[in-house]
Length: 488
Image 1 (spheres, helix red, strand yellow):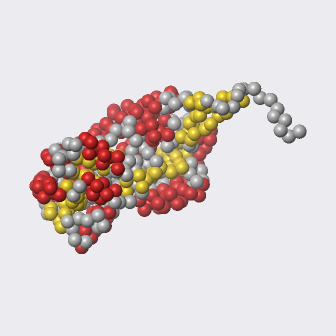
Image 2 (cartoon, rainbow, N blue to C red):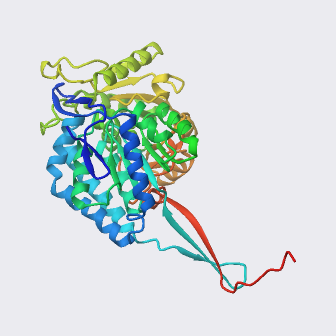
């Protein structure tokens, strides 16, 4: 059992412990992996620290670093089907989605590979005669990276690619329940060939491995994607050495539909917004805000379409939505639906586990729509992270904006209208990192991703995502040095 990669070597957990990885479709054990702890994290951090301080990778010419990162993309494309199958086994998502994820992941590595040598520094005008000033970006150092279970390899790619392209060393900790594709991509990085200690992989729980990454004074940056409460703890723990932090902490994302929207498109996108990957998406459009005049008709159309969503095995090409990730997570979703009903919300469809005998061994929950919702309800304010859509009414543009912004989160949102001026006005007022107009969910490597308010700190993807992994340095040069004779 050698699933952890530390200082260029595959190794078992120091404790010898292992963990079974479960297929959420049928609860079968699909793999047994090493279960690391604090000691393993310390070994990996030490290896990353030594590798960075030695400078072999950080001082490698940027063009060469870019070639290595590009090679990772090429190997992902080569092994796309194997990676997609592992991702669907691990998460329960459809194989079609997993294949699309692999294309996106390869694209992320290609994008950051291309950026690696594009910033040679900037000469700035100095107000002091006979001097030069240059601003350069340098790697942060040792980067602790903690990824979630819903998009295991995609989220890893968003962190690994810019970190390596800029010359950092990394210690990656995937979710303990979905580590398989991260293990595989680490094998691919070993095939590419990096100096020892540049790439490290530690498996284990966040309370042990993740906490050590956040706490260690040898880690210069911590990048975390996950729940808000864990993110707050990481932020507090990381203050020990005032390390840089990058946090993506989810959202409660509004999808605003005006009466003048293209009706069929808006209905279809509302379904995609919430039920894609069983709602286990940080940017899911879990809050639907519909203008009064079309509310009843719109909800009726949604309910009819929702009833037809096919649940099943992700490897069945007809499956449209897979299971939730675990029994514990399904219980959380069920609890929120009960809370919503107690608060006065009405369940129009779903609201229970499916009765289909073929789905009884999996962690399935029916796609659910709840109406009569108010913005002060917990079901509206808190992230459920499941296939549960809440519907609110609004009278006019001002109320739509107010309701949309009435949350601690600010990750993403959408506006559906045929009035482009209205779309631009509303978009400008939404306190969110991404706003879609007449669409929901698209993202790409060239555009930054992250949130306002308690949805997080910093950005991933785009040039901003690269800059997260760098420090800015000003270099001043006196061209005619001579004594000042200030002190005589």
